[in-house]
Image 1 (tube, rainbow over the protein chains, first blue to last red):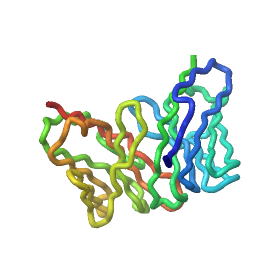
Image 2 (tube, one colour):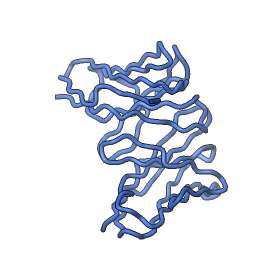
Image 3 (tube, chains in turn orange, red):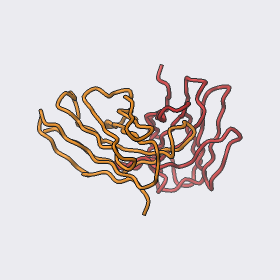
Image 4 (cartoon, chains in turn brown, orange):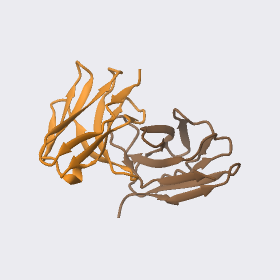
Length: 114
Length: 109
C-alpha cells in the first residue's frame, strides 16, 4: 500500500530531552513537510523539503531540526530548546513543491512532555 | 490579519440539512485551493480541490470567488458521518500550503 507512515503514534518525553519523530513515504513524492497542530488550532509549518539534501524553515522552526538524506524519509527532531513541544505533529508529502499540488498527510505523532 | 480565516463554529445542523462554510484569504496571489476534512484526533484528509469554475463531488460543492477572495464548501443532505472539522488550504508558488484553523460541523440526529 502506498502512503505516509509516522512513528511512534504516541511519544512521551521528559523536559530537556531531544526526541526524533519518524516520517516515511513510498509515494515517490519529492516534497515533504512537517506541521504542528495545537488543540483547536490550525496547522503551522515547521520545516519543508523540496528535494533530497535540501530543506527550508517554515513559520515556527525554532527548537526543531530536520534532515532529508533520502527521498522517502524526513525525520523531525524536537530539541530541548523548543519551549512548548507538547502537540500533534503531522508529516505530509506532495508530488513536488509546486503550489498547485495537494498535500497528503501521515497519521501523526502525539508528543507529550512530562 | 491572518492569511486564511475560517469561522471556527461549531455549526450544529440536523441530518438532511444543507450547510455552507466560507474561507477568506488575504493574499490575492494564492493560486490553488483545497478543502480538507479532519476527524477528531486524526490527520487531515483531502476532501476536494477547488477549481475556478466551481466543482461538485456528490453532495459536496466547492466554489472560488477570486474577486471577494473566498472559497466556499456546500454540503447537501448532511449525514451524521459528515461531522468533522473542515480545513481550507491555499497554495502559492512553490510554498507549502497554508491552512485555516478549521470549521467544526456537528450533524445531529
